[in-house]
Length: 340
Picture (cartoon, rainbow, N blue to C red):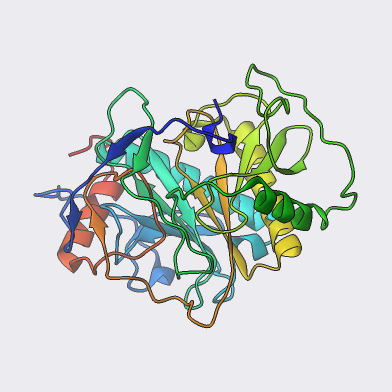
């Protein structure tokens, strides 16, 4: 059931994960293996590449094995993935899907999350985060605390926040829909499943739909205008595991919805998260970013989570050791398919 869209919700299991101040190495004695080399990568430790996309280890991982992906050649500093041409955007998101499968295979994790947020000192990019410590069976998780930011805090997070009033949600819905070609067009409540949310049988604040997807303001936004994009057909919450046509269709719908939020709300940017542990149903979170005199790209004290804490964040962690990163690069790029 789509609790993200509901007026009320059931609180899932809370995870209280250890919060570290220094990185933990994922592998001890790395095998002696050849690694891929890319002359254009400079000091970056590349773990995967394809035509038009390169992936390298984050030098300041929020969780072990965080990987950054950028278009190749990289875009302009400070721009968003939603500023990219659609074909470049899709290539980057398909690259993230391939990297998530690599991380699952080599690190022994069951799922990965995606986080994207424009940053002034970086080209457009996405980050793939391995979700360590999950069991084989899906169960819902939430962070141990809530967080609400009325303006851009310098990062985006998947944490939930207290419920907004119907009046505030309706006002924001009107602003977003005013940017549609036909704001008064009746919604399409077609749904290929049993859930009443997409069928419009429960109170909701829909801002966009097409024949395959629906975008709705969540009543529990951690920033104004947080929007959830869902397919009309029930699909797995593990977005990276979707069949390629379903995956491409969903990330294309997310791009269309993000561009609508930029126009309708006058946001300075939009963050994007795939995670999938509040509801077992495919959904993308889009977070409008609103500048303020005090907002910027200065994150709080760097945090590092050795296992999945019930949320993800675009924050950088502490600087990782060069030795640990090189060992991890070897683990991910070895010709062997066996994880250590």
